[in-house]
Image (cartoon, rainbow, N blue to C red; front, side):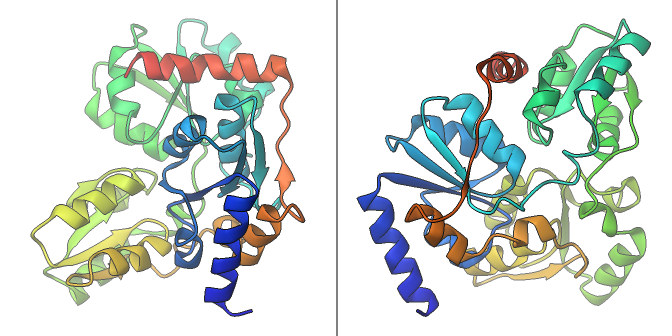
Length: 304
């Protein structure tokens, strides 16, 4: 089969088998074309909870599929490729958080959503890249332990000088591949381009940005901006997606090295196998883990 034939087969099978396909923004364009919903990790899990289908396929990484299961316990949730993990989510576990709680008893412990369900059980609130500053501003504690991404955390710290932040040495290996030299080279090559970056990048990169925001925020800004050229400082796939969305504009990668190999692991054939029942890994969470991990997510929703 060629790509179009495989896509047509997936579209037919997902209707036949009552399947909803979620694609994270970092997935390839051929997967985007067969997805029911495209977006950031938490937004996808909310869409899944509202979808009428009883089976959900996550084309993304493991923690995202777990978040879908947290919000949709009665649905069958499949991770399209079982090898698709998140290095940042693997940097800390629940025991690490419990030790931090003993060390900083007066602090609120805040976890980025890019963490495992088991770890989420031990934190006070979860945040996304788009909601972090708004939620952290509302936390009454002066002291905040922010895990695991110290780059996203330091971006929040810049905007909340009245808070005392404590960081653990963690972050996204993909976004940290970009360095200040890459920015200077890209800007020299494209002096009229706006620089749009994700807050997971290093501070030395972030300080040169014209816009800092989540993946969907970056895409929205590029679509709505009157500017015609953009340097994109997030996962390389977003450059291609923006080229499709805005053919009248030009997009350049800040660095060709910003490729998430875990996101790239999922192929269109993985989706086909999952939608036909021949592939994918079903995500299972105990009811105790699900209920305890859901609490800090519900706190995030409550805080806006």
